[in-house]
Length: 129
Image (cartoon, rainbow, N blue to C red):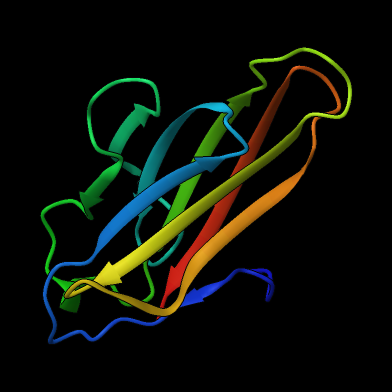
């Protein structure tokens, strides 16, 4: 596995962690979140959604206890669209992992920059430790 994969620290004795997806810069966004086993195989979709409906983009990580998550991987497929097609548009996405309401170590993942066209796709990976 590449050494550049962000590491997310959890308290294995703590409560079930949750994820929040936030799209910034007034962009339209959709996402799919997956949990992968310790071998980075067997993906299981945790949740999918978007930021234009009335459903909160904050959700628990499957139905697994925190103790079963160390060394498992998370991934997010994020797709953003600029509501204004003019040049110079920026995108920003933040994924936050919390446990007991608190952001965990390494639990803030972000990506941002200029759109090269009207849409931008981002894939983020992280590993629980």
